[in-house]
Image 1 (tube, rainbow, N blue to C red):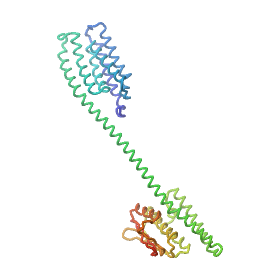
Image 2 (image 1 turned 120 degrees about the vertical axis):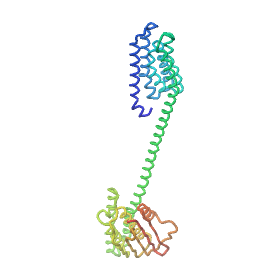
Image 3 (image 1 turned 45 degrees about the vertical axis):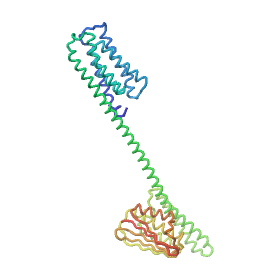
Image 4 (image 1 turned 90 degrees about the vertical axis):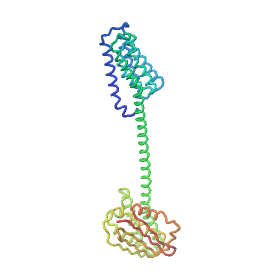
Length: 389
């Protein structure tokens, strides 16, 4: 039974109470004399048995979907008690309104139609048995009415069953749809989790990993300069300490809101100039040209800052360059970041660009932009990152 059926099932209870109460009242108050001693009281008792069977068994059979012997026994008790009550007192036939409904609720439709059709013939049969064909003036009305009830049960019963079956099919389809929606939601959550993990991996690579790489490089430089060039070692030590502080700030920012700490208290221009100055302090000739910029969304600023950080980290780790040029300008509705070095370069067509550049390309794509790399052995490298303003 569906939840909606359970919620409104009390209406059936009200209907059965009214039918059985009306039947009991008619049987108890009618003035026709009993042709069988005590027939009135036996009929009332049997009507009470059908009502009690519904209360104790019928409701549970329908509510809980109980089948097998209990369902069959309920149908047998219902039919036998109803027929016996009507045969004792024809006026007990009013109970058929409830009995027929119960049969359609608990029995297969063909069986329910067959039994209901047969039971509708019991009231006129009972009149004939008790009073004969000519004794009851109502028999001429009751027989045509019985014929209509037979037709009603034979045709309307299957139609009702089809409606119920369609309702159950719709309920199953709704359950399947809800299950499909739940599956889609689960897959969406998993996809979102995977995308968030990838984004966090890029964040860590572009911030903490790059900072630690710089600290390791500076530590190696300090180790080689401590004896021969103490002043340079001190400069590199200060730069390493500043890089470590920046890394700590980045870690705290990622925990707090995953927004670059460099953008928390300054503009993207200032953050880029600090990145350029940090590379310049390592002994490389760095130029930084930044044009006038409009107000940029935070997401765009993050893409640009991570782009310059990744490009400069690659220059420091792989290029062996002596000079680097950084340029940021707006043109034709887009903002373009260009980082050019005079280092060793690499073969772009090999496809091995590394996780950092792949992450930069993914960031650019997410922002609706693109990443282009121009390089070749001994020709240096030019990285162009373009995103819409």
